[in-house]
Length: 78
Image (cartoon, rainbow, N blue to C red; front, side, top):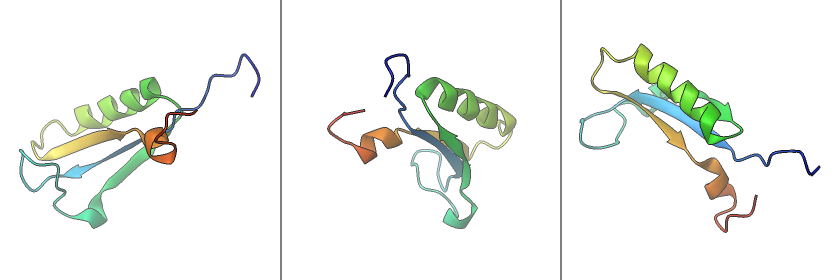
C-alpha cells in the first residue's frame, strides 16, 4: 500500500422493518435492504442517514452500519 493511500475500513449499511421497536430483529429477512458497502465510516454514515431519513414515516424501519472490517480481521489489522 502506498504511503498516501488511506486504509480501507469496510462498512456495510443494511436495513429493514423490525418486528418490535425495542429489538433489532427484522420482520422479514428476505426484505432486508442492502444499501451498500463503503470504504470508511464517514461514507457509510452518509448512506445510512439518507436511507433513514427517507423512511422516517415508518417507525419500524431501521438501518444499521456494520463494521465489516472488524469481522474480517477482529485483531484490528488494516
